[in-house]
Image 1 (tube, rainbow, N blue to C red):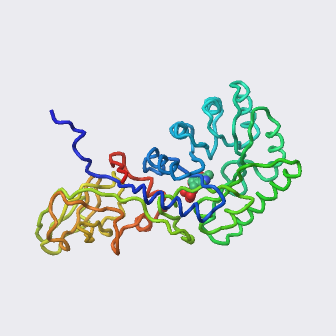
Image 2 (cartoon, rainbow, N blue to C red):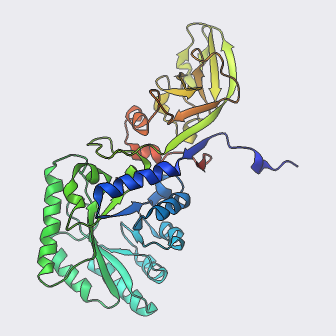
Length: 375
Ligand SMILES: Cc1ncc(COP(=O)(O)O)c(C=O)c1O
């Protein structure tokens, strides 16, 4: 019997590790002497966490940031500090402390649980205090922060190495809230500094802030947390100060080439009806692979470097395109759905605009059957 593993996947996402490393270096240079923590939650935004983490570890990432315990455990073997950036549930505390994952202190009750777990297992627990300076999601509110930090720093077993916060608006250069958040953060540092409480790692900047708020990357801040810029993408709004480049290309194959008569309805709902005899191609990728439905009758895919307009509605597994611009196209041809070089390159940002969403959702939406290939 044939080994099915030898059959290549129909749809694949090429991730350029060299581009990833180049992007990392550009970020590193822009924020030096601050260190760079690579945010690799959600399977490195869907690109496949381990190959990405290994490349960034070799490139010199200071630490990795994740959202929850399973993501943290996957990264521990790489030997870098791994930090849960959001919250930790009570039942997660003991195993995370035992494993040596850096935990967020979002309130005093959590600090006490972490302390108790640390004492029980005889291992110090590294924590970063999380401040809610304006995100409205998690962490200590400014009014309570100094007292809670003082109390947490007295708890046995807690190694309070860091303090951090997060921005909701850093894509908006000069936003009042963002500046106020940093003022609040620095005010808290000053207040607890009078009690000689200091932290090794102080951080607030995400990719938006790296591009729009240089202040967030300078003392007292000495770490930045970046995710989307590593992939060469940016938030929809805001400056694009860093010259990072896209790391991914979504590719598939042409599975059929046919010439159809005028009047032929294409795909579900016949949202396209051919006005003239047309050479059409059926491409083996659909919305299950991450193609936005919004490409229907609007977007294009690249075959032999030529843009081929999408005809009709994208379906789950297939997309129909016009091959009128590429008469030499044939079954088996490689099709670039996203990425590519030159004037017709399709960017994550283009898809985000078409879909009326942000680039994060595009990157995180490639389907399970899409093979991740690291080149
Ligand atoms: C707490 C925290 N810091 C940093 C980041 C990285 O954000 P970005 O991918 O915009 O750099 C995230 C991602 O959402 C986050 O939740």
